[in-house]
Length: 297
Image 1 (cartoon, one colour):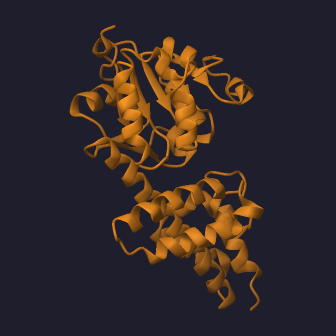
Image 2 (cartoon, one colour; image 1 turned 90 degrees about the horizontal axis):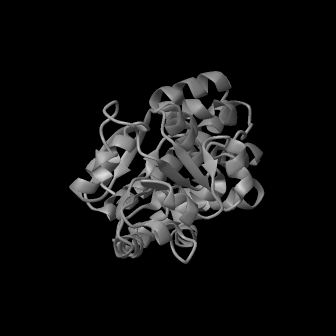
């Protein structure tokens, strides 16, 4: 198969067939966006019912089946073990990997990248690492940011798919993209925690909650998507689950500590989110405000 004949700039050819491995919040949003852009979509999820519920494209029983019917395979999974399970083994995507372009979009840390790259190359495929920045609603609107790591030629092939999701930035080798996603999620954690602290502090100093949030949102516009968490103490629907952010912060602080970087704010954020994980793990990350609201005056 001549992969380059299918991966062409928007509007110049029929979009390639795309398989999406993992239909959690982000995978589902990617699937919805690409389907709206006239891509033929195949889906696989460990729990098939979640993929069926999307009613987008064909749902496959195994990653290998999904990969065999696609030119491009996108993975959006929970971590290194989930990536290994989806890619490797007799029913993994690489069983049908020859000639395919794999776009790995999970937040799984940089350590998995060399292992996955070697496996994809051995299977005759190509790989780029392309974590995405933005809430699911932003992805569905095609306004996300995609950080892409890989060779110039492979990124050029992936770009015609990724531009449908938002702006694309090539950041060099594959592992760079994985590292930058950890920087991004660490920044998000630091900001969400600081806003929780200051929202409650402002209220307790006698300010109107709406005025406090108005100021915080002007400084950090991304907070606008989570207004209900800060003002109404309502942490659903979940845009980004506490448990997922804790996982990412553990990857991040481990990476930073190995490079002898000083990250006290991010370490504090990791500990603060971990403290609410047992009771609020499935809730949105704004649940980190709860201990501030419960603290004695």
